[in-house]
Length: 281
Image 1 (cartoon, rainbow, N blue to C red):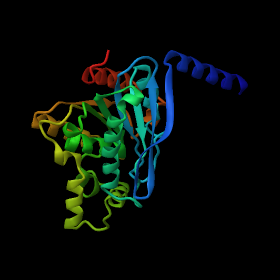
Image 2: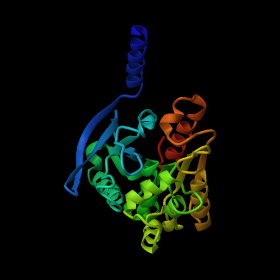
Image 3: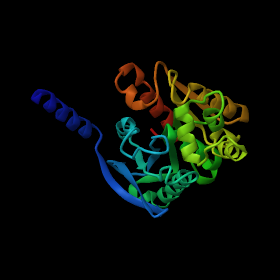
């Protein structure tokens, strides 16, 4: 056991040395619904301005935190020389839609306003989110991306068609429970369907939206892979840019992918794609 702990510490020191970075935690970016909303930021060593990523965690819109679920991509982004911000947002059922969506847009505006304090390039910002966070960045990216000046969007296994997920071909009891708690309905009536369409990223697809890279495991039983296939096809039909990276054999959640090195090739692909669209070396 002692040898194992020493090895882990040694690896950590090597990793930090290989990619020196400055970390700031629990910075308040807004107060909404009597709740303090906070973010963490990691800044590369050296002179900015650096390409920038805003991270939005998952957790079924009801749980999660800026330091969990999405953590496996922290180090790849640090090693690649990106500034990254990881944000908290208001959670259901205490705070229902559109609270979380509003918080993401508020965070984007705050980060752009404070970009130079953190060596961030406000003209080279990407949104990345996973699961419920993937839904949030996909929605904000499609609906408001150009207006907010977002350069690229990377949703991981995102709910893109909320109506199909809660009531249609992709429905499960767990999906209905999570989506209905987020949107605030109990019955599949007309008002529920309006909310489902209004909260669906696929509703807002347009030719002027930022480029998207969707990343999804083809064995996902929580948010079906078909959700990303449908979103990709709709984006391309609209004349915008979208790629779909398939994690073959991957179930729901990048933390699960960490157990199998064969499932982690997405990291290098994500970094290459981000460097292309954020014009990073």
